[in-house]
Length: 444
Image 1: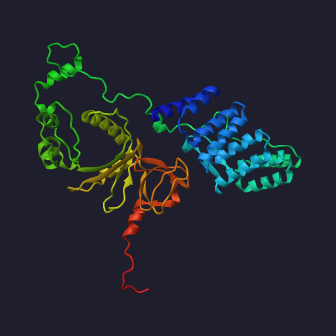
Image 2 (image 1 turned 45 degrees about the vertical axis):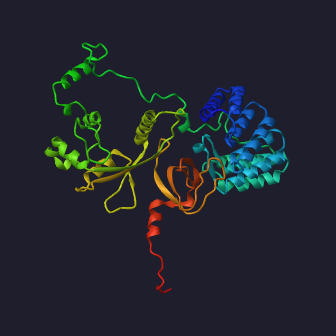
Image 3 (image 1 turned 120 degrees about the vertical axis):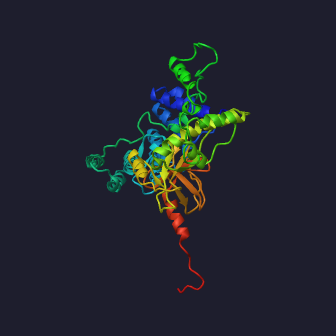
């Protein structure tokens, strides 16, 4: 059985083959994906259509909508395949199913799911009218176009007028379908992990016990020689402490050499006489709460030290992509995102003086920032493979706002989309929980 990485690689190679119109190679790569999702069957169907084989495309789209019964674009393309096979009644039925899966929405944007296509309700109705024209149902085709008028986009009235005129003259209409060359692509967060990564880097000689060692660069040699005549506290950079405060120069290296545990915040402050003595108010105690979910792929049997090295590298990347937020004074239940350099500088200017200092939070999941958190008001069971399951009361990290009705989120290591109406902001949920309920002695 191939690994997830191999399947994502085959998927990506299939997409590249479609881009160069190599239909045989594309079908080969898409067929190599084991236990394919509905999107993979959809891709095969689109390739068969582009290769001029609507019969094979129909079989592929059948499998796609069987896997995902809510896949509106799958019903659309199956209708196109039936249309090309001159099965016009079946095509009308498929277009009706596609319209039903739009659920009274004017458009479904599939971009977030990897397909560069927006399915619009008026296009589905237009296709339905086109199939009705081919079946000789001209009156029904005209009524279908009238039904499409409220859903018609602005500035497209000319298209509707031309279509109505053609129907009145009993001239067939052309179909709308997914543009040639557009197929579902694998998630970008998976693609960036396909290339091998060098987590350890390359070794560099900074100092040597061998006289005139040629491996030491001149600049490094001069720094090392200079360090030999200075106290150890001047040979390394300031290293931030995880407890909030700061660490004095040289202290970090000396602690590593001695094997003793690090000092507390008070010990650190007393040891760094330089900046603290000159300008005590320039130092701020910063407490950062970090919440990360990172994917790691490591060889079985990896040692503890090697695993910790890989984890440190992954966390370093996550801290650079995570969403940084701060807690304003007096606001104990909500975190405010820090989105720009100006907002951070504004925070520095308003940090209160005191031991508590500034409280920050950094959240991330799968290399993506967490925009905010929501709490489920109801249970939601996944209807499609890309959906995210949760139960009432679960907290979900929001990674992206797909559209006005859907969010993409993370929970318990899983990423998927879910309806916005099933959740409320975490701050609003906490406030609702804090509202006291009626007491036994209260009057109605």
